[in-house]
Length: 126
Image 1: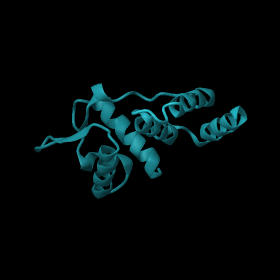
Image 2: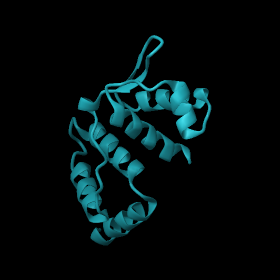
Image 3: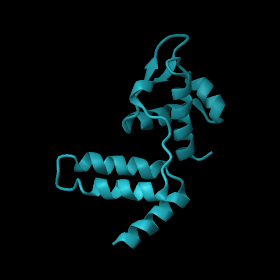
């Protein structure tokens, strides 16, 4: 499993069991990586804004705030282009940076074939 897939699966694992914590050791065994890799992955997810925190103690572990995350959203290439066009219209507004961040997050979770199709559709619109 590559890192991008693991990060996605890690968030989904934590969402599925929320509010119960999962230990780094348990997650490492689940994803067949080291506990240090899980800790780095959790840090990367936290840095990107995923609401994950650590519950201390013997029965503690990592928890994701389910109320502040969305389940997977599957968009068609056309829907992704529509969102990209709408977000692009935010240029020059106070929301431009947030729109760019949202678009990067959207593209990061899309399958490569859908990203390529979205690029093709977007190029046809210009």
